[in-house]
Length: 257
Ligand code: HXC
Image 1 (cartoon, rainbow, N blue to C red):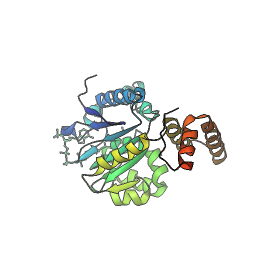
Image 2 (cartoon, rainbow, N blue to C red):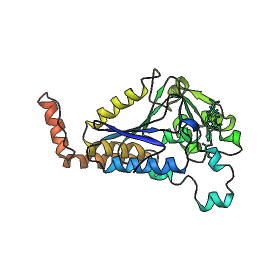
Image 3 (cartoon, rainbow, N blue to C red):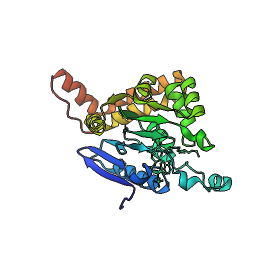
């Protein structure tokens, strides 16, 4: 597929996707969604890829859903088209996706970053849910995911005032996992993704599944789910390899089986 709104590359075992609509600050329209889903699906099927990095430009990760595309839509258009539901497919990706965020991550941009597994931010990053300034509200998960990340008080503040959070505040609040100097964010994310891609893919996917389950279930059920996955890992050759390598004081050589 020839992409027009994203750039897709591989760096060793890592798939790198760069949002590329510079004239619209990477605003997310239907074409971006279709291309992003196709690129992610390609990396999911590619046995040489172990992790994915999603990034934007230095100025904007993404400044939101495309306001110009939404502006004249009616309620019926939105409802019958089930607008934004397509993004759910992105969240079903099994391989880890790291968001490398520099500049603006607003509205749908912030929501897309939160759909990734974790966020590494440049010190220039600015997060916000400014939909209220447009007379609407978050529509790609912001009111739910942001609240789970940063708690009710800050999420309310962000959604009701539309103010932006800088990288330092986002790190304090637990929205991002680390902050690095501008210009290093993609390299840092690629480094983290390369590290992940060097581990056993089945165990990587199960780790991701278990952490995500904590959002969907009770503590008791989540603990049971974790324990059952943990038990099942002892059917992996990579479990034997990982533990044997430790005992033999050598690096593990995982085979994804
Ligand atoms: C469409 C956008 C856009 C967006 C920016 N652009 N954001 N186009 N949708 N979300 C376009 C501008 O129209 C402009 O195009 C070009 O990108 C550059 O933007 P400027 O505004 O000139 O840049 P700047 O002055 O640096 O300001 C940057 C900014 C501002 C603060 C990020 O662009 C901004 O406020 N953008 C909108 C942010 C926002 O409200 N996001 C939430 C969207 S709603 P032209 O052609 O004029 O040069 C959403 C969820 C919707 O995401 C869910 C509910 C339905």
